[in-house]
Amino acid sequence: MTTAARARASSATLWTRIISRRSRVSSSPRKRACTRSFASTDFIRPHILELAPYKPILPLDVLSGQLGIPVEQIIKLDANENPYGPPQEVFDALANLEFPHIYPDPESRRLREKLSFECGVPSENIIVGCGADELIDLIFRVVLEPGDCIINTPPTFGMYAFDCCVNAGQIVDVPRGSAPTFKIDVEAIKAAVQENKPKMLFLTSPNNPDGTVIDEADIDELLKLPVLVVLDEAYIEFCETQSRMQAVLEHDNLIVLRTFSKRAGLAGIRVGYAGMPLWIMTYMWRVKQPYNVSAVAEVAACAALDNAEYLKKIKELLVRERERLFSELLEFDSLTPYPSQSNFILIKVLGNAEDLKNYLAREGIMVRYYSSPPQLASCIRISVGKPEHTDSLIRALQRYYSM
Image (tube, rainbow, N blue to C red; front, side, top):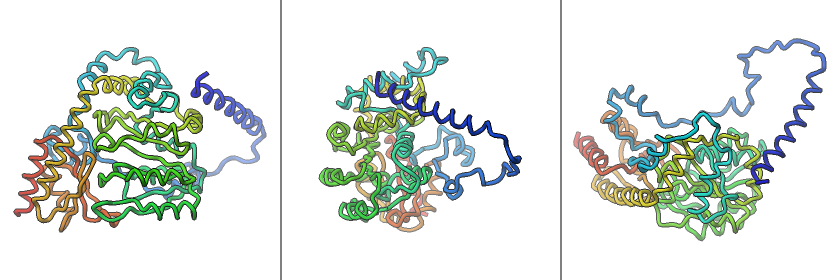
């Protein structure tokens, strides 16, 4: 019996016991009818009442309607998507999709085997999700009790803090240093771990939104701490640093997250994966929804992996365009681009950054604007696009600064 099968069997037994107990309780006569209004917040968990909703990027059709610009004329540089899309093999595989009326493999066996070959990690140490976002949430469900805390290192990807709040956890922020290095403070993290006894430490390398890479020695030092280290490598393909995926076989406290959204152009299909030690994998299988990865997603991801040469070529194109975009941005006195090892560039704007973002939107060019935290105040983030996207962006910036 596989690890996943044992986990499901154990979970099924647990639920049988719970349902049995509930049945005995529900057989008791009711003393009075329920008088609460269904519009009442009494039904909502208290911490959810105070939860601020996550604000995702608007989809193309909505943007088109708001801006009055045809979809095909919008240059989308606000969500770090891959402008080249997936290889042709993905389209061919989807066109020939078999058995869409049958539920997908709940263990995504074919994809996990391919990832095992690519990453050099046994498939038993790999789990696949509906994007890395789902896996982040599952990790919280497995690890966090209400009131438990995590260490976060802002500015960074917002889903760690969001999912922590959804799961009634507490966040201890250990801010990164100032631009342009945005370096993590290892000593401050150590002190925070000692003081707060957190369950998890979240690290992103390259980091979003600044594109900096955490020093290897710093990661090694943090892995010595009595805390689960969740290392998000969503953008690892765009830098020279080697993935830590194989290190999950050596460190019982390391989880590594990866995604197909950036390198393979599958952001709209939602496929992410994680490598982790077997001891925690057992519990991930228990909480995972059985059909969380659709047949479409698994087929698309497998097809993308079949053309490694395409993935390598697209990575090289984006890295080359990133360097060109950085050089072009340096020509503007009012813009200070920060060096990046990802597929985006963070830029400090001298003046009104929000006004610049709105102007570019009216021109059909979408970029990300930040007003907080302090390290990101008056910054915009621009995803690396195709050469023609860079050309249009630079012309729009020239028009803006000549007004």
